[in-house]
Length: 344
Ligand SMILES: [Zn+2]
Image 1: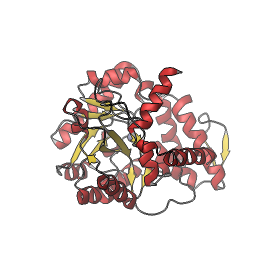
Image 2: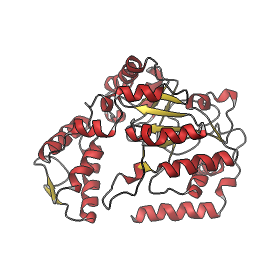
Image 3: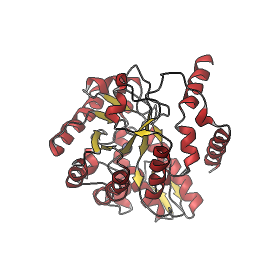
Image 4: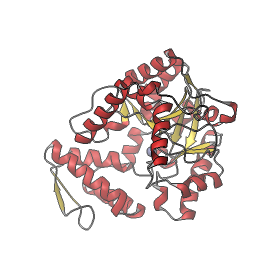
């Protein structure tokens, strides 16, 4: 909560300082790629640790309308990365990770209304109902229990989860354990054991939240939509050996091509932070044949240079205000950040 208030204050201060108008290095930026996850109406319940992953269709509508009204151009990811043709700094490509069904139900109509292209990064394991949406499962388990314990696994023996504050702390402790202490295989074993113990059906959860292949095909038939790859099982690739990481990427492109008849040209790294995808993964995405790959580390897409491990701006459900996006989609802000990094 404190951290969110600090971010909110910093973004508010940058907006007052007119960060959106700060000068960028001339010709440096080829535009921005933004990341969305869920697009769904309504307010989150009191315990909603994944709320940062959801924006409302109303906010998406305001976001697109506002930037179009100010002369920005929404382009596809493919157009944006072909920077030699000069997409221009005031270009935005919209991407949505994981292939949630609400993208089809609530985001697609908004994109159509504005004629805005979008890319959905599909994880075949979710559409096949074989991979674990562990953060969604963990939220549901903690929401309905008074304590959390899994002998031999997890951050501590037993965690009390009676009220919202305890639930929040338990979610954070388990998330930290699952993504750092436990390796990828142990993470999946632990979440399967937790789901068994607390009666959450992981396949049903995926079926509830994520598009099946028929739905992916129907949205992919729209010329506004492109489908990208998001690995087979939503793995933190940097935690896998070389061959396994390469296989996760290649197999996901194979599977998507087999299902929709078109091979994805680009890939988004699951999680996208440095501990999940760094330089090795960028090189592997190139080796796997993708034209470009994206993290979730913020910044603009440079006009020249590598097309792998490119930054994206996450549109955070906890910060659904246009002025925050004006700040984050300022080439000048990231030019300044890069200068400060170089000089330190
Ligand atoms: Zn993802």
